[in-house]
Image 1: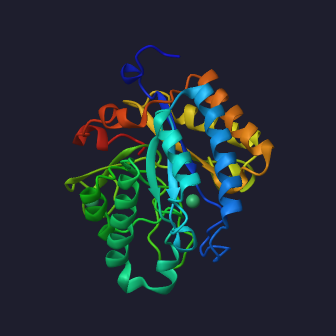
Image 2: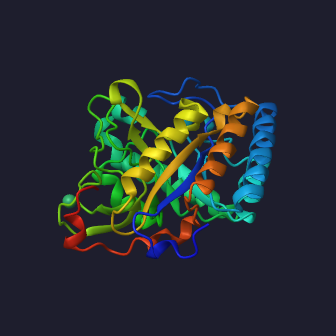
Length: 307
Ligand SMILES: [Zn+2]
Ligand SMILES: [Zn+2]
């Protein structure tokens, strides 16, 4: 691994983000009944096994998103899952809130801010009650509206993993411009703004690693369950090529979903991809160190050719 990554131009950093998702949530959850105690126990066992293998490879340098969508809200803190999140935190992992409330944009657009404020503060209180202090956030489906920024700042959720370049799949929902290809401080007025010159917020946004690869050159994303290993590697290689010669470090995230844990091949694939990242000179930093890697950028850097 490189000795002093912050000095290297275009050095690519990657943060693995494990989503504690039980089912796919695009855009509505495919399940509305809460999990049974038996299902919770199986899921917890799978998560713990995956975390142990991840820690063996990269220590605690990953994020665990506690999933709190409506059907799973009451069970997200039950003892067997509580012990799972605690074990991850004790191994050094960063705890994130991963609410998956994207149905709001479909059904209740006018109540988004009030609903978010309640969901986030209740979840943080529950996590604090079991000894966890979440510092990161990923909304679900990449959705992040301007009204959510002050809520996240107040809650101390200052690492946001929602950005996704080129992502706008839900009609009427906010999307992300194609230039959102590396970590940057979110604009205080609109998280989707790039190089606008407005005051920055206190939130560092880390996008999903994405590149236009394959036939049709459509965006492909570093999402473990959406790609095979060669595709993940191709996206990563493209990101490395694009980063070459650019000023300062760059950082993206890699999404790994809990709903794939019942397929051992997907766990192997996620870990093989992380090995590949390290073998090819990528850096997997501690999430808490990210704000120091990305000090506030000045106008000269806003004028660089890429985002
Ligand atoms: Zn998710
Ligand atoms: Zn702006």
